[in-house]
Image 1 (cartoon, rainbow, N blue to C red):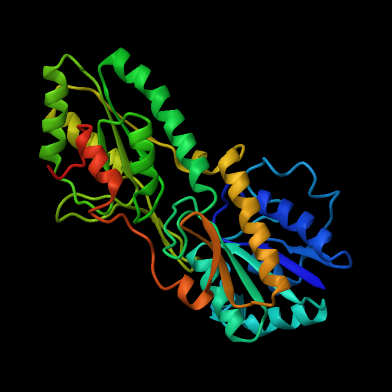
Image 2 (cartoon, helix red, strand yellow):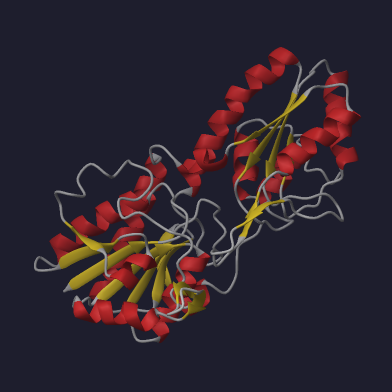
Length: 362
């Protein structure tokens, strides 16, 4: 048996842990199997650029963030940017070339680790007859078909640590500090880290905020001689009847819109409307880096073991998932149907309100 792996989309802590575990479990379960890893995600499939995965070259990567296979969030082979004979850049479907490469290398099964975009392409390859198994990956935790994705816990830990560090400088200078975090249109990172890191205001995309409610919370703290405040905000959050803030457009990306800047916008508004100095901090890619948390290493191992089980059962066209703390699987067709957003009856929203944390809506 020959197994190919690739990591697509943004990097996430736990990718190396999955590669590490799949390599070891596969070689023990299928002693004669061979593993390869395509470089830079689907681009590696298209260009047939890969490395062989062995016990030796995957040793020591369990704890490391990122991915030894490299990754790309621009390479949708069903809508790929190439040059025509005149040198003009055009988009076309090059998926058949990638499939021919799989056949040339005698690949029996393709394991795809990624988020909604990467797994959508995995579904499309499955439709074309490739034996595919998906593994859910995103720090945003916004895949609806699994309870949690690896990378999320590490990101929450990183954000929480930074909130704790910012508390001391905010208190020392009686400042308001706004911390902008990733998540796109889902507020999971902000909600979890905001509660764990003792934020005073948590602003998420699922709840439009009123700046007057934020000012009211700051005034309440001032009246209690707490002359500083910590606000955490998801990059996709926005004011009531307002628009999301776009930092830039990446023309050659399948998902060209890059969010960012809402923290700075809110800081400028609050500095004019309060008696405080306001500072904005965007954690950006810090949230993706560094060592993988023990929780995510274990979760990655669980996903890896479930993936190898699906291979042995020849249950292709599926994505491994976690449901009610048990490993399961769901079809790739269903896996990419919906994103997971915070519902208004979510327990943690109720807990945040009970603790006196403002969500900007009241």
